[in-house]
Image (cartoon, rainbow, N blue to C red; front, side, top):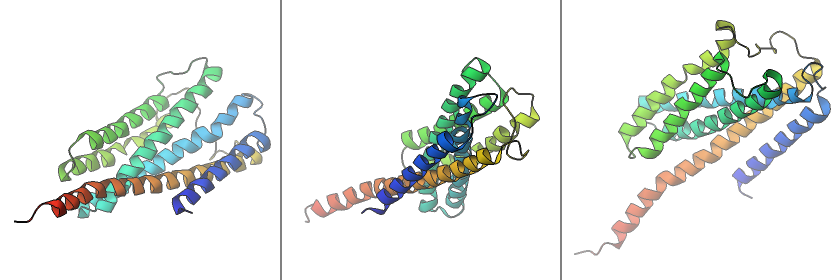
Length: 227
């Protein structure tokens, strides 16, 4: 069986196990009720997005330093996965906000900075898709990928730097009961495994895509009549 299929199946199984802990092990929050269960995937998805964008930085630096094709592919792959998890973070945040705040969206510092993060890396992907393949596009995208990461600490510290309606960190304050803390840590670990598998699969797709034009060129050259 294809190793990528095995990895994907394992990641899905872990996420199903996390869902079981979320719905059947973690207690219902006394103040927010069942909707609080969104917290586990909401925060885990945000962390997975941050880690993915950190991988973009590593790959981008590798490309700018040594023009590493592997680094460029890693950056492209991780950027897409990061955007996916940022999208999940935003959507789940809005689902959580509606019953608690009475609205899906408010221009809160945490929400706004997260949206900016999504726009930055969605723009990164757009540049990679629309620009002609080559070193210039790869270098420009690498710079965007590196400097875009500056917004990650802004997102994280926004609840302490500005007055926001978004709740602050609860993990470091021991505010979670042991069952909730275990469920969160387990869900976060499963989500990070899923992100790693997604990056690996996407990297394989990028590698095959990069090889296709070269293969076509070799085939066309072989088919040319010799004089």
